[in-house]
Length: 99
Image 1: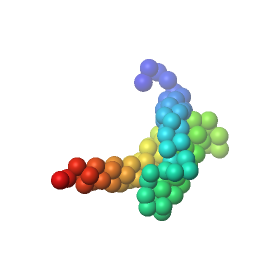
Image 2: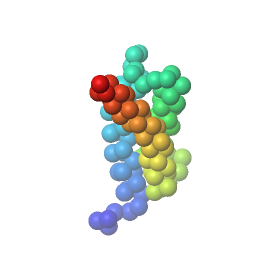
Image 3: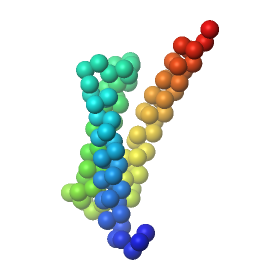
């Protein structure tokens, strides 16, 4: 990939992912978040913190050398919660549109 070292590639990818995920910080942590039930909201918050911590560690190279495995683990951890949230929003939208 343009002759960059693997550590530079994974630091860059992790940093970009971290910056993009911080853009959704306020919707998760504002006082009146629309995600429900509360257990789902708190599990999404916990997952958000874990993913951002993994990406921060991978981007900075603190504690260990940046790896592809850690980057993809952080990306994978996002999928179940966002898929579930999308399904809930979709079915709520369809329920409201039904006559």
